[in-house]
Length: 385
Image (cartoon, rainbow, N blue to C red; front, side):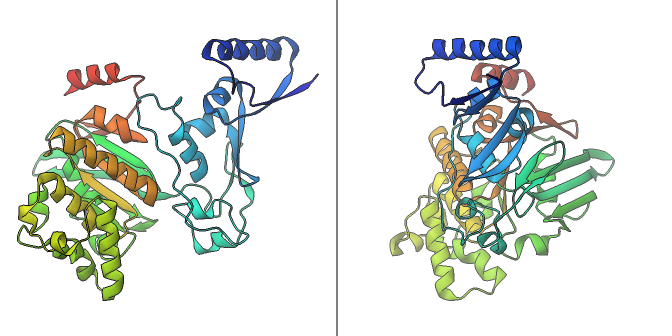
């Protein structure tokens, strides 16, 4: 035959049989020129056998392209979620599924209820599969995963000392990026620039395609919120938990009491803290280090940010609290769909949760290739840091 359809051909095979099957299919393809249509949920198998991949969801093709395009840089939110959920393609990282459906579209995009970047039009308008360059096609009313923040040629000096040297960076919607580097290399300086906390720098920062400043980033919902390294200095210790968590809402204005109360309750529940009168009336200074950091995260969540910048969020916590904070921070990002830029000097920690890792060294930003295993990661950590 000139075409053979393979429907989940390895689902019941052990590892050795699977390997033999792949070798057989490759030999038949090379010797006889046979075309194969592979139907599978196994992305590793698709990577091993396919030259092109079509991604289906809700009865329609949502993305199509070469195997390298689809697996290397997905453009549809569903494809991105599939890759994050693949144990075979993420040997070092923790595995996260796709956020549950909140509501169904009304004849619009089938992924509407689970999409973190949806617009109102997506509820009723069914996207068409359209060209996206390089032979790739994407069915998305926003043209695929959008760029949330873009930094162009950022430079920063303290006197004659150059700290940041023409750094450029893009953060996509729903992405977890880690910025790794030694202490004192300028990681915090860069995040303060991206967060709008200083305007004394060279270059441009765009947020949703528009020039960013502190007012536009922090004073409204779906903007940028920052979690600082020292929770003791991030929140007034004399405040109650209720006052601390509600402060961003009060400063932004425009929320009635009921909506504000609901947001505070949801934020505390999302970070694993109780919404009881006893707890919310507790002074922040009486909380443990882990609880204080959770309160800081809850403060940020009340503003429903599109981007959360976390500056060494676990560096002052014990190992147990560090693991807990990191896991629920990643879980929140996965369920709520916001983007995270995390600053850390812990490369192993970054490798566990990040979609992309950048190394800041000598003022320059370098993309970082993922490791195959934890041993390689630990060796590099010891050599560099």
